Structure formats: C-alpha cells, structure tokens
Image (cartoon, rainbow, N blue to C red; front, side, top):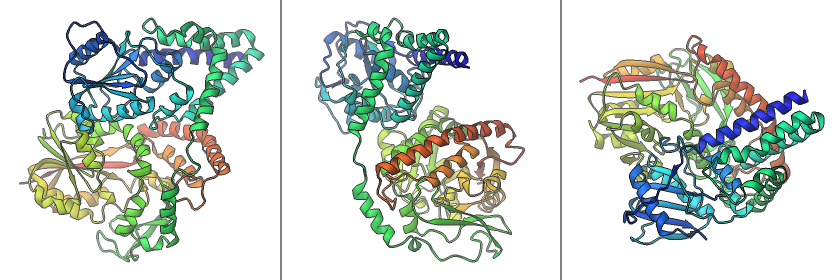
Length: 607
C-alpha cells in the first residue's frame, strides 16, 4: 500500500509541475526596442522597484504590438516561491481571453494606458510614474484594471527588471481575497502531501525517495529555462527543508495579519438592533389565493431558512393545485426584501458572489447563443444585469451588439464605468420602461422574474421596450423539476428568501402569448455549475454551521466557534465530492427525467 501511495504522490508532484509550467506558457518575452516609450502609457511601480529606459521602451513596444492596455511585468529573477505562487493563481494561456478572470499581478511593475487609469479616477500626467505601492496595493489595482480592460490585459517576462525581496507577511498580505482556494486550505493540502511523503519514506524507502524526488524537482520543471532566480539551486535541492519552513512562515504571517475576531463589529450592532425588533414585521399577511390564477387550492411545498446568507427567518413556498404556480406565502414586503438582499450581492457578500459569477462563463455564452438562429441583435437590454457579467461575456458571441443593463442597485453603474455594459439604467423596470419604449431588438431576463413581486408587470414592460419583431429571452427556475421534489427544501433553486415567484413553463408561455409573443425556442437547463446534489449538500452544511463572522449571527464570533465551523466544513469535503460525482453521473439523463434547475424561453414580439 505504501508503494502505491508513494507512486501516486510522485506522479501527482510531476503532473502538478507540468500543469504549472503550462500555466506560464502564455508569457510573452520583452524584446529590445529603439522606439521611445509611448506617451499613451504610464508606469505603476511597487515600492523599491526600478525600471530602466530599455525595459520601458521594450514594454511599451510589446503592449502596442499585442494590443494591450494593461501589461504586468514579471522579473526574470522572480524568487522561486513567488513564481510558484504566481503560476498557481494565473493561467497566462487563457487569462487574456477570459473576460471573467480575476486580475492578478507579479507585484512589481505595470504598464497601463493613461485612459484606463483615468476611468479609475487616477489620472497621471505624461512622463509621470505612480510609485511606492505595496504588493497588496498593486494586486488590488490589477483587479480593477482587469475589469476595465478585460480582454486587453496581459503579462510579459522582463529580463531586465530586478525583483525586490519580500517577506512572508508581505506575500500573504498581497494574496488576492477572491482566490477560489483559501490560503488555509492550500497550506493544509501541502502539509498533508508532506506528511504522506515522510510516511512513505519510512514504510517504503525506495518508493518514498522517488516521490520526494518529484517534490524536489518541481521548481525546476516549472521554471524551465526562461526564469533564472538567484535561489534556483538552493530552492530545488533544499526544498525538503525550505518548503516546510515556508509553510510555517506563511501560516505565522497569516495569523499575524488576521483581522479582528469580529471584522464587522459596527455592522453587527446595526443588524442586532434590527433583529431585536423581530423578523415577523418583514412579511405581508398570508394570502388565501394563488396570485397567478386566483385559485384557493393551495398546498404547502417547502419551508426553508435563508439558504445563502443564513439570516434568521423561515420562509414558506406554496403551490397552486390548479395552475402549479409556486410562490412565497406569506410574502416578504419591500422592507423585508431589502433586509434579506443586503450584503448578499454587495457589501460583505460581494467578493464571494464574484467567485460564483466567475464560474458562469459557459452558461452566459449558452444564453447568448440561443438567439443565433433567430436574429442578429443590434441593441440588447439585460434586465436584472447586476454587475454586468452576462453582457461582458455575451460580447464574445455578439461583438457588434450594443448592450445595455438595467438593475435596481448601483452595481449597474459600476458595470458602465468598467465598460461591461455600454449603458446602465438604474431603477425599477416597469417605471423605466416608458422612457425606453421600442428601443431594443432583444430583452433578456436571466434569473430575474422569480425575484420580482409582479412578474406579469415585468413582461408588460418588456413588451413595451421591444421593437416589433424583437425577441424576449427568459431563464427561470423550473418548480416542476423532478429533482425539486427529490431534494425538497435543500434544492438550491428555491433560493429562499429571494425567489418570490416560480412559474411552471406552461404558465409563462401562456402569459407571453396573452401579451402578443410567439414562443420560438424552448430549452431545459441541465448540468449547471454547482449541480443539484452538490448544492443540496452545501446548503445542508451551511444551515448546520452558519459562519460565526456574519454580523447577523446572534452570538459574537469566538475562536472555539471559528474552529468548530472550520472542522465541520472540512468534514464535508468527501460528501461534497461524492455529490459532485453524482451530479456528473446523472447529467446525461436529466432531460429524460425532467430534471435540471431551470428552463429558457425565447419569444418574438409580433407586430
């Protein structure tokens, strides 16, 4: 058994080295240039970094040749540990074309177009550098720059750029907060691999030595011949000693930089004051009839807690026995919706939601491609656009289309600032519809209608802003999915308390027909990221152990509660992995089983 474990470890080390090396394969190389630095570019430098004229000329020439507005420069002598960290965070082969990729930096020097800096409110006169930034500040800046230049941000190796020495504390402070793998999990993974290697050395010395060799040679395989860090020999041959030392230093730095035990103390006081008044005031009176057809034949469907944030409260969905419409009853009032939406898509929840949206690229493209056989839109309004993620990705499918976004939050204004939408409209759709009459070829509502208090008023507004012959595309959860009944209250698309109305397909198609629309395409959405079973397991653990750091938690966070929370989530990993495997296994059969999470309708407005 030990030799099999050692063989697997050795293969894992080698394959990971190949993976990291491939992630660096998209790096360009600065070449000497005789042209003076372009006046269109500015230089942003970390504290202690010096950039000679030759590198400035080469960097501007490279950015101009490659059509880049933002160019992050990697020193040729970047220390091994920083190079490995960079490779783990950035896939240079796909970074530029991935519009949703998070901005990353080697944290030394950046060449950026002056106009992009101006959009961020940081204008720089020609010939002026922005200098003295910490590694953390440069990382944050790159995150904003990538958003402003999603397909024109790239990386290049600068042989003439010299790296600055950074402490473990500086490296940890500069680690992006939107990484998919938390630092604690990454350290635990490396510690487990190290412990297994030691155990294999003791139980099967020859095989263990082979696994250790794979670990030792990893940096050499990743660096190749392009990087020449001064520590390259030491970092390789002394890695069995230096590696654990680096892990320990990183863990100490992370502990030293840990914020206050209660990072939202001020916000906690506000939430606790609201909760002290009770959450019952956030609900309207229970209604006795279906809001869709008026029938009084109502049946209990599920009662759930806040499925994402874990805020106090219980929410009931009822189903109409006549038309099948599923709706929240009693329904949240506007004040209730404001309370339960707060800090979900913005505020303290914004960074976590960014990670969710970043995984949806393929789903966004599928939605945009649905229009291909039917129309070539010149103008497109996305209702409920949020931060504009769909509009950004849809530009790959429809590069000539002008995308506008509409949302009630200020996120759509930020989307316009970044250029993710050509124009942002902020407000309530039915109220704004009159000013947008007959302005669009396409209106989209992706997971929007289920959040609204009056879906039919939203459909009327869509009809008003569409040109004759224009198309309306809608995606909503399917309350008649077979998995919704199998998984009960743990089915993620219930998304309580945010989803107020869930309409069966037949109901929505009929409502469109009554408003002068003809359905031209139907599509069942299956195999969505997150999956039904995986989502149900995550929801179950989230309800068992809500984060003690949330300001709406009734008990202030303590070290014991934080450790218990981490332990429970660690124990969930095997179950989540098994649930993800079940989602993959059942995916080919979801259509036949009427499974999946949602459906799409494409309808044409008749003249």
